[in-house]
Length: 385
DNA sequence: TACAATT
Image (tube, rainbow, N blue to C red):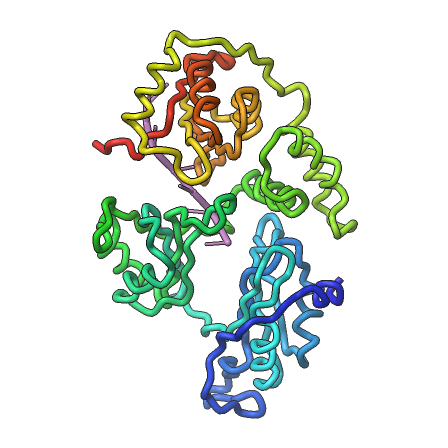
């Protein structure tokens, strides 16, 4: 319900263009086509569950809409999180930017700006950047990339548990695809300024190319965070399950899908029965190994590398493996972005050194199904051949 | 088989 959403949202500064005098109606060019540049808006970072009707209702509250479209995945129908609104009156477009840009809807802060004219040259101009120095901020990154062209958007992803620490990963969208290509040529594999490690720059994956399974996983993760926040303990993971069916939209057609996914992921049948035991490696030898590999706990705790997980492994198995040894703050199964299968390894963060060392000593060499796990403190980087 | 990250 849009009125409820509006009552809880805040506005912030507009980033719309200024200084241009606006005509008072549609501009018709000499070839008969309509110039939409002052009336057509692009809206980004919409909540996943926002419908076309809510979208139209929200933006229709500003003024008469000529046309609007929430962009969806061609196959799954899932919202891609952005849309277009074309107003009749350019003044209403301006007003929509001033009123609605920066609006907080659920977990998102929407962006409202003038849409660039549709053109083949602006497609596939989005880059994914990894290996960025943790000290580099968005402005630094833009400065580095701006030599290759006009930047439309940029973002550096941040860790949500350690509140705002860079994950060394980001996105840069250029105005033109050829600018993005030049940036890859110029910056991929290069070390920024005084950085110790080279960065990776490549074209970003297109969300619409995600598999159905990947979309479901994302949908589930989004829903889980919305209701319970970051997950820390097994008990929280299980207690959140009943609440998932009670979302704000009772008409949400994806509910049965979510229920099925949850049953598949957390059914008792899949819980492994564990018999932790001590490996031949002693705690004392682990202590000395830790000294070689680590300078200390990074951020929230001690990061542990877990190798030889099956392609079907998920986060729950890591919680169950490591949870008995002490405080686990985070687990992550690394998956192939296109297949969504585990790449054979994952990471676990534990708060206390002694508990982490005990977990490693016990679980390294542990047989899980037909696999023998290899567990150690994470190293800073594996040498590349 | 070997140390991530996809708004």
